[in-house]
Image 1: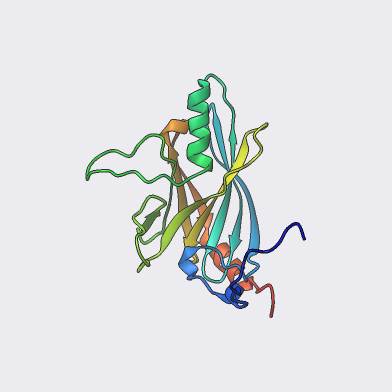
Image 2: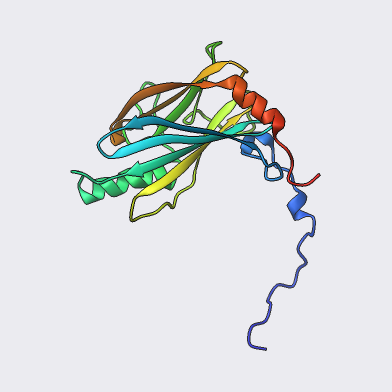
Length: 198
């Protein structure tokens, strides 16, 4: 035989049954309910952010944001950095208290009617004791047209009332932009979510 297995230990056959905590991201065993949005969040000379849809689960919801890029007058290196900051990593910056956020940092946030505010740049070390919002960058995209996406995970579901989604990205030419979303529709969709298997 030309190719032979070098693995000698047996793989745990129940590994796929491991359930991750709900706050880490969308459940892998649940279908979720799709709510089409197609809401233009922001546009600059080089970047467009479009909220394509929300997928609601029983424990939380994900926001699918499409990101379109064009180089325009940007130098090649600046354009590449812009693309990389949005698409391939959630950068961690060490800041001292009172220091401004780096312009290259793409920031997301939600604010509920009771004043609770969650952002994608909040400290999330350890298991959260309160709701959270995290950016789950998807990377990739189509390099010819420079399309890609970002998925935001909000845990738990928002209150069943209007709330705000905010974005700001100075490097991308996006000033603070806030849109209102329907929390009641998202919660209702989450209740309709079903498991892939009974």
